[in-house]
Image 1 (cartoon, one colour):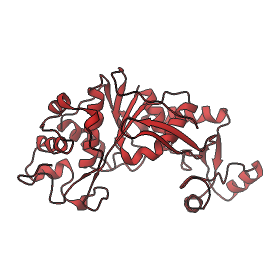
Image 2 (cartoon, rainbow, N blue to C red; image 1 turned 90 degrees about the vertical axis):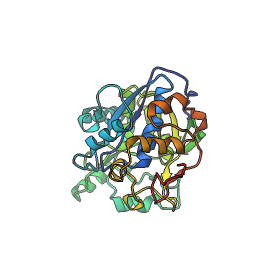
Image 3 (tube, rainbow, N blue to C red; image 1 turned 135 degrees about the horizontal axis):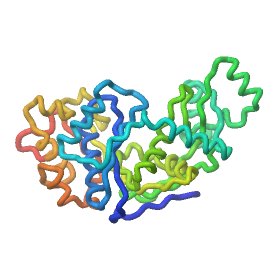
Image 4 (cartoon, rainbow, N blue to C red; image 1 turned 120 degrees about the vertical axis):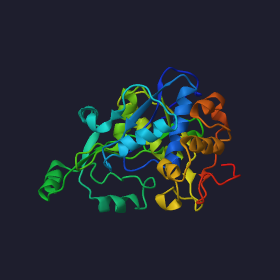
Length: 314
């Protein structure tokens, strides 16, 4: 099956990035991943780009609060912050190019129909089975007459694609006819991330391990668009004691929570550094000792009592 290649993290002069979605405050897991993305970039001679994925689930004021938190813990970035909502023509151009090449089709499936199809006993687990792939023009017209709006899907020519990850090695995952533009006209994440990474010169993508399964789809799409495939590093997550994603119910999990308890941004950086096996209170200190080969392979389990229990090493 097709594959992508990745370098060994050596200096390239490209860029790394962090791209939060402004749906709320960044929690400790988000901030830890941001720190790791920054460390990977800064220790390999790359620039560090910041992008706000504001096409969906936007909470007023959240983007600025996220930027403030990142700056408060010592992260800096190169160039202006990029907002996806200002880049809609670029996504449309990518969809148009794929359509001109015969690589897209209209999908009229409802969300319920897609969920049912994704759990059907055929094809890769969770993959869209191509229900609308071969509709005739009359069938498409009938769908429109029912009042259904069409999403645009990729007409994939592979079932799998292999990527290389600095932490996970060779990883092969399913590639289906992924959505490029939703029925409401909003460009889909798998498209926007590929287009934006290339536009920002991002050749190193460091993000949470939960996003590894979607990476083969993105790498394959980059190949179809004639764009470079970045180096990937999917880092372990921060989880609660139940092994689930962090949430507000897990206690003081945001920087503002910690500040309210009388702690400082340096305390939070120290906790993050400790979770990586280092003793540092600033990101600059952490950058000087950071070794990507020493990243823990298991998630950091965050106790509900908080980050800074006296005498406890994070």
